[in-house]
Every structure is written in structure tokens, then in C-alpha cells.
Image (cartoon, rainbow, N blue to C red; front, side, top):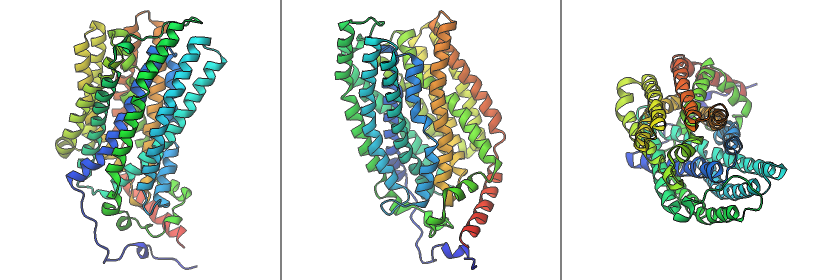
Length: 491
């Protein structure tokens, strides 16, 4: 049996080094994340608010259905490994990004139509078998939405590793993830403008009573106004995705120069990728850290718009605008962190400081509810967004450092799995804690406040896990595992 030298798989010296990405290209890539920000506003903002406040779908049912988008996240590892091993349209990442984007933008509109049927069922037959059937259908649609999103976003994140170098990666992260917040802000402005109609601001569905034609009319009014939003915004998002990525991988990717398996993609099997993934105990440590951090960061996603509606008396367009101070704060936090804070304090300390600041700001959100001060609420949300940006930039930079070229997609898939699972759990946990709080407390403010307290405690737990993360140990173990795996499989 002949053993092939791993160096044989390296590109020849005559192969030119791809150019370094410019700031302009970084912002161009950020258009993709901008689109994802706009889509997240539709699903976790508009759909969630309508389901809980307007259609009176129980919070645990609504949030559990929406969370299916995240619970299919194990597929992220598969899509990441596929983009490592099986090029599509001649490239490792771009084809997956495009196909996934087409699917998740189309599916968002389907999800809204199923939601109308669920709301109609709640109002006509209550919590009976047909209603649960529509709830299951909504969960299935969101599961497909999550698969499509995973097929697109995981290869996109792996492409960021492929086209960047260690010395400019934190800047790339700051720019790209800042654009995610721009998307949330822009999406909030577009959506609130389209939704700012007098006929829907008071179109709340009352408690269930069979045969109330007013309730059916309100559902029709809501659907006629909101349906166009789910056509216009997804179409914009798909256009942004294509504008962001067409031609970028071909020009800037360093995959062939870095990967010892570049000419042997068919040899990177799911089994070998898994062996590399699990070679270091640090994989489990960082996975746990991301899980706790993300749950703590996003548990309020499922309750913030209902919080504004129930405690502060805001209508749909007003609660949608709550995303603006959060997005602006996060935008400033991410942008400033990559260029100023991380270079000075390092990635781990930056993430730690962000967790501490975010926990403190949740106290302001609670205080705003106690005083029913909408201005304080917006300020608290804005500051929470600022520190969320700081910790997001730090943690994401750590995440991209915890990859290796040969299996970058697989590692990005694993980290995406942790984050997506946590986002799903955070949605369900937020809804469940809110439901439990409403049973235990007579005061809605206390029910919502219990969600925010849980988040703050989670931030402290994330700091404890962060202390155990060791990048050098991870990289050493992973490179050794790749050498072992590739030598064995290329024999």
C-alpha cells in the first residue's frame, strides 16, 4: 500500500495568492447578513407578536412552533460538511448560499399563511384537534425554513473563513455582523411603515367566543395588510444575498491554498470530519459556552414585542420599532469592538465585559416595566444592544479562530448548531417562563421580569464557561487530528 505525501495535495508555487479583501468587499458581504436581520424581524418580531397578542395563540404554542426553525439545527453540521466536501456550481460555498436563500425567503410567506389558519382555528373551535393540527403544520413550515436557512448561512460563514486572514478577520466580523444589525433596523423601519395602518393598530382579536364575526373581520384586516410585507421584504432579502456573494468566493477564497485536502474533497467524509471535530475537549467547552451565552442573549426575543404591547400598551407598529434602538446599539457595539476593543483587550476579555454589561442593562429593562416608562425601556434596550454587540463581536471572533481549513464548514456548522439550538431553546424558554410567570403572578410585569432575570443569571454562567476556553489547545489538537485522519484516508 502506497502512502501519498500530503504535500502533493497543496497547490503549486505558481498558483497566485488571491487578493486580500477590501473594506468595500467586507461591506458588500455584510449585505447578506443585513438580509438575515430583516428576515429575523419578520419571524421573531412580526409573526411572534401577531400570534401571541393579536390572534391570542398561547405563547408556548406560538414560540414552540417558531423555535422549530432552530431545532433542526443539527443539519448545520451536515451542510457545513457538504460545502467542505462537495462543490456546487464549481464552488464550495456560493451555490449552497444561493439555493438556501431562495428557499427560506419563499417559506416565510408560507409560514404566515399557516399562521392565519391557526389563528382562525383558535377563534372558531378553540384549543381542539384542528387547532393543534395547524400548530403542528406551522412547526413543520418553520422546520423547513430552518433547514433552508442552515443550508445558506453555514456555508456563508465558512466562506468568511476561506476569504479572510487572521489579521483582518476581526474587522471582517465587525463589518459583516454590524450589517446584521443594519438589517434589523432597516427591516423595522420598512415593516413599521407598512404596518402603521389605523385599521390594524386596534385590530386585536378578543377572547375566544364562537361565531364572533368581528374577530373574523379583524383577522382578514390583519392579513390583507401584513401579507404584502412578507412579499416585499423577502424579495429584497434575496436580492441582497445575490448582490453580496456573486463572484466573491471565486476571487478571494484561500481554501485551495490552505487545505491539505483541497484536491481530495471526496475523501473528507462525514466520519472523518466528525473525528476532527471531536479531537479536542475544547470543542465541547466552547459548544457549551455558545449554548449558554446564546440562550441568555436571546430569551427576550420571544417576549419583547408582547412586553411592549401588554405592559406599555403599544400597538404592532410601535413594538416593531423597539428593534431600532436594539439594532442601533448592537451596530455601534459590533463596529467599535472589532476595530478598537478587541485589538486592545483581546477576544476573551472583550466577550466577558460584554456579558457583564448586558446583564446590568437587563435590569434597566425591568425597571422600565415597573415604572411603565417607554423612554427608559427604549434606552435599556439600546444599551443592551450595545453590550450585545460587544460580546457578539468577541464571541464570533473566537468562533472563527476555532476552525481549521480542511473542515472549516464542519466546525462552523458545529458552532452554528450550538447557536441555533440555543436560539430555539431561548424562544421556547422565554415563552414557557412567561406562561409560568402569568400563572404564578397576577401582575404581567412580574411575569415578563422573570424572563429578564433568567437572562442575567445566564450571562454570569457564560462568563464561568468562557474561562475554560483555550484556543491554542484546540488548534494543536485539531491539526494533529487532521494529519492523522488524512494520512489514514489517503493511503
